[in-house]
Amino acid sequence: MADPSSSGRSSTTITDLDMDTLTRCASYLSIQDISNMAVSCKILNRVAYSDSVWQSFFRQEWQNVAPLWSNGSNQSSSMREAYLFRYTALRQFKYVDPLFRHIPTVGKRPHQILFDKNTILFSQGQSIRSLHIDDLIDGNISVANRGNHKARVTCMRLFSLNDTYLYQSDPGRDDNILVTSSSDHYIRLWSKGGSRCFKGHNAPVLTLSDKLLGDDTGKCFASGGEDGTVRLWSINCTGKRGQQALKATLYGHENVVSLMSVAGHKTSLLVSISNNGKVRVWDTTTASSYVRSSCCVGMTSVPVAPVGMKCHESLLYVAAGTSVTAIDLRTMNRAFMIVQKSKIHSFEFLPSKYSLCTGGTDSALLWDMRRVSDTLKVEPKAELEGHVGHVKLLHMDAHKVVTGGPDDLFVNVWESDTGAQTNSLICSAPDMGGCSAMAVDGCRIVTAGDDDRVNAVLRFRDFKTATCHVSSLVSEQSSAVSKFWGSGSDCSSEELDFQI
Image 1 (cartoon, one colour):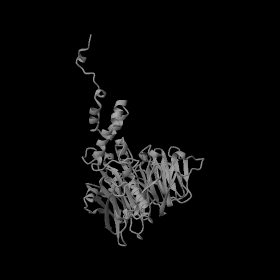
Image 2: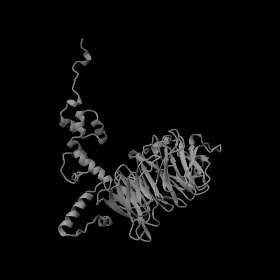
Image 3: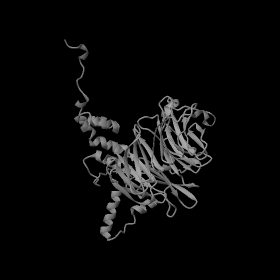
Image 4: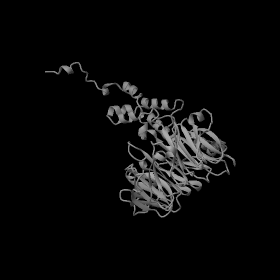
C-alpha cells in the first residue's frame, strides 16, 4: 500500500534544474560555497567552474577593471582563471599603480607597525598612534595619539576580544585589544573603553606572548624583560595598576628574557628564551601567585642570542647565529637544523607551504622544510638578492615574501613559491637611511622611513584597485626599446615607484 505521506511529493532534485538557472543561483553564493559545491558532484562542478559565475565574482570585486589572464592577453575561455590571476597578482603586489599615501610624522621613526582591520597602529618612541585607512583613502591624513608610555615602547600585540570570555555577549566582541610593553616597566592594555596599566616587573619589559594562553574560562598573556622573570597576567581582571591581574611570576632565567611564543599543540604551554640562549617551557596551568614555583617542564639551549622564535604545532623554531633549530616540545630533542654561511638577522616561516625564510646580509634565503633532515646538508631553494645591509624585516604569507632593512631604501617583494621578485617599493628618502618598520595585510602594505633629517614618514599602499600590471609595463618598455633603439620611455618601474 502506498505511503499517503509520499503522495504528490516531487522527486525533482537541484541537479534537474537547467544550467542557466543553476548558475544564476550560484552567483549569489560566496567563493567558499562555490568551492564546496565544486566537489559535490559532476553537474555542480560544471556550475562552479562556469564563466558566468566567475564573471559575477569579478564584477563584484573589481567593477571597472578589464580581466587579464596569466598569458597577458585580454581573452580567455575561463573567467575563473582571470579572477584567480588578478586575486593572486594583487596579493603579490604585481602592479605599479597602487593607491598611495605619504604620511609625514614629527619625531623619531616608527619602530613597530600593526594592521588592526581598518586601522594602522604604530609606536613612535613612547607614543602609540593610529590612522584610519578609510580616511587615508579619502585623502584625509590625520594621525591620532592613542596614548603614551613613559619610555620607549618595546612590543605591541593584538588579541581578539572573542578570546576573552567576559566579552562574549558584547556587540564589539569581534574587535581587537592592543597590549603594549615599555622600558618604563609597565604594560598597557588599550581598548575602546580606555586603557589599563599592569605593573609588576622591576625592569624594562621587552616582550609579550604572541598569543593568549589558557582555555575559554580564563585567558591570560605573558610578559618578560630585563629582570629575568616571566609574568602571567589575566586579561579580564582589573585593579590598581593591574596588581589583581598578575596571576604568577615564573623564575628560571638568569638573563634578560627576550622572546616568547605559545605552543601550537597545547595553548597552556609557554616557551621563553633569554639573551644567553636558554630556552624554558612553562606549564601555565600549574602557575600560582601564592607559591613560588618555576612551573618549568622543559629546558634546552642554543649557542648564541636569538633573533627570532616561533611555535607551530609541537615544534619550536629558534633562529640564532647562523642557524634555525627546530625542537620537538614533547621530547625537547632537536628535530632538524638549517645552517647558512652568514649571520641570521630575521626569520619567518609559513607552515602551510613548508617554507621558511631567513634574512642575512644583502640578501635573504628561502628554504623548503620538506627537504630538511638532521643528517643531510640542505641548500636553500632561492636566494632573494638585491638588498643593502642587514635584512631585519620579513613578512611571509601564502602569496608573497616581503623583505627590508634599516640600511635599504627599498622593500622587495617575492613570490612565496618560487622566490621570483615581483616588485620593489621605496620606503625612505635617498641618503636618509632605510626601512625601520613595516606591516603587510593582503593587498596593503605600510612602511616607515625618513622623509628628511627632522621628520619620519609612513608610506601606505593599497593594491586592491590597481590596474597597471607589471607585465604590461615590461611589454610597453620592450616595444619602446625595439622601436626607438633605446630606453626612450620615461616610465621605468623604479621611477614609477619613486613617484607613487
